[in-house]
Image (cartoon, rainbow over all chains, first blue to last red; front, side, top):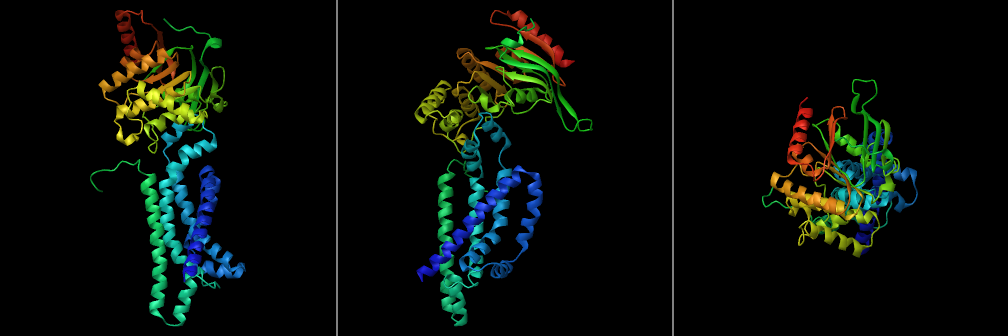
Length: 203
Length: 256
């Protein structure tokens, strides 16, 4: 049972990591070049409208390996959101602060370390939180493409046995995992963003 | 009283510099600077004075290497600050209009920023940051984040950040304009003392005649588009009557 949950968890994390890496790279290209932005933005918007189930069908037709199919589905369903969120974060960086850091003539690596990474981190953590929820819903569908383990596969078994209690148990395990990771991300936020001013009056 | 430094000995040299924004020949074309000649000698504190929109900040950005001139030559220490941008690492520091502190860094880490770019080892970096924070009366606030500091304290951190790199040239873009007059006055005095003590060449942008007279040992008044309308140098020996005359002349030039 634990092995099934673990394999689902690893598929979610691998898919999110893949989408974040590709999305981050695309966002950097888009922010540097208007031509690339004009080319990629409509494509990514189009991808956002494609249902997860369509990606499942495409993956079955295009690829053979089950794990690669699942990875592909996870990446394609979360890629547009990651790209747009990182792009928004990059564009939202303070021009004044950027100019100030530039005045010290940083190398590209130092510019990224002292300015870009800390400036976009809040948006990136939010993007991970949002996409984690999306990914946990998509992974179950993705595991229907021939996986022999995982929460999606087990849910399929429960459906065939018409076992409501079993289906609920598997669902809750996945939800429990999502809550744990969300909690971890919140913990990171509270530690990393302690520099933020807190108003005594709530919004 | 006009300054007569030659270009070869100038720390900052502008030769027929123009800056045009927008597409040439279109309605959007805007000439911010028009054929400006200006030399600043080493150790001089030049106050550039002018009304809002006269091109002060454009000149500032061209000297800082953040903007490229449309035509003419800008040289700082004999080099092109835009084309040879990286060469000026550690040689030029800027104090901006706002404090522009990185909110995710403590006061100490903000002051260390310029030294990080110079690959200064961490212990030396911390010692320098500590020293400058203490000099500016911020001892005990090293670990405070910017949001926990007042406007005046934040601006002092930004001054400490500029001085910590020990750059020979300081560029200041109305650094005290957002502060109340009493805090600004105190910081101005501290600033002048630190610049003199450390033998810096400083260019100070301002729109206040009083501030220019207090800070500069030379004042250049600009008219739109940035051309020199009045250029005057003075020193500690300049009498109050002469200063009053300079103030009156500047007022007349700005009014026309």
